[in-house]
Image 1: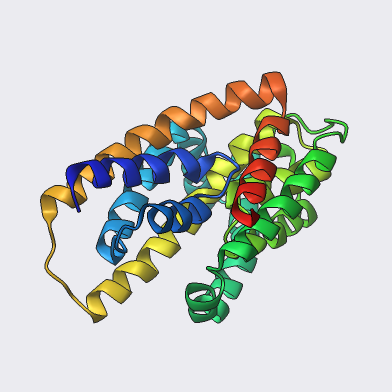
Image 2: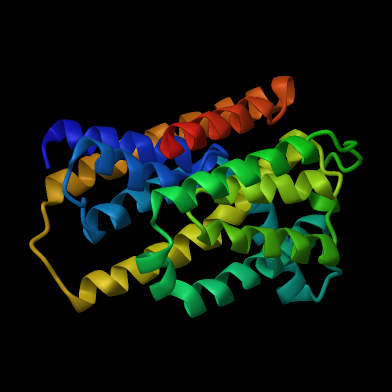
Length: 263
């Protein structure tokens, strides 16, 4: 890959990973439209690792609070505080996508990459996103979610295995349906990304280890850095946009992209 391909693909992954517009769809469509060869598993692992570092850095306060209360809970048997319960809810919400991802990994990789499917999924979930964003905002803090809500959000997250659905999009949509305020839904989506990206990156790394290829370390390092910086900036941008405008700009973009694909 040329340096400009590396930068463009890394920017694309970093920008779309946390915006509710489907990173997988863009990483399938853009190289196909431009006639580029597949970037390879090693590059995918690198840019996902960059996004993972970015979301950990962005959510460092919530993560530190979760780990601190877990440590106190384990060491002294203290009652689980709100941050410790939030950590447990994140684990619960990650179970459906982990189970379905392992079960359907080969099918998703081979059969769920058709542009028509991406277009239909993008449009359907855009309409659902618009409907969910009209729901009242009764839960303003992510620590207020319970077991049942976490499980429903986790089931929604599992639908993101379909390219075009968008992991951040479906988690924010599910959270809004359950009454979570827009900024809280976005922050919860960031935290839910950590176990998902970690697991997906581990699966890709195992695939890479099974069929090792020559690694271009400079290209991988550049892709990781660009994706990480883009992802970090986009998380702050997303919080400002959803607080002011809601989810409709992203839904409108998804509907327009679906129309372009179908046409």
